[in-house]
Length: 67
Image 1 (cartoon, rainbow, N blue to C red):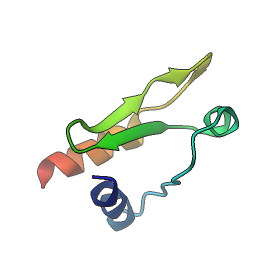
Image 2 (cartoon, one colour; image 1 turned 45 degrees about the horizontal axis):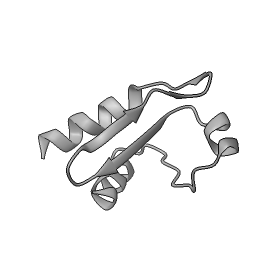
Image 3 (cartoon, rainbow, N blue to C red; image 1 turned 60 degrees about the vertical axis):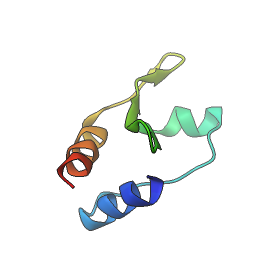
Image 4 (cartoon, rainbow, N blue to C red; image 1 turned 180 degrees about the horizontal axis):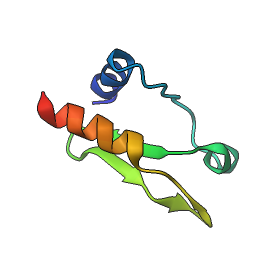
């Protein structure tokens, strides 16, 4: 699933950064999502007091569902 989502992002010129999750990365991120074979793409709403956008996650999810 990760590879499929990364390829969809690359095809649509969406920059995606794959990173080890730690508090510093989560503080700097604008949007966070996770993937797996069962759930597809799942948006992460926030971490602590930090809240994330849901724009790219929605776009990638729509593209994935269109396959």
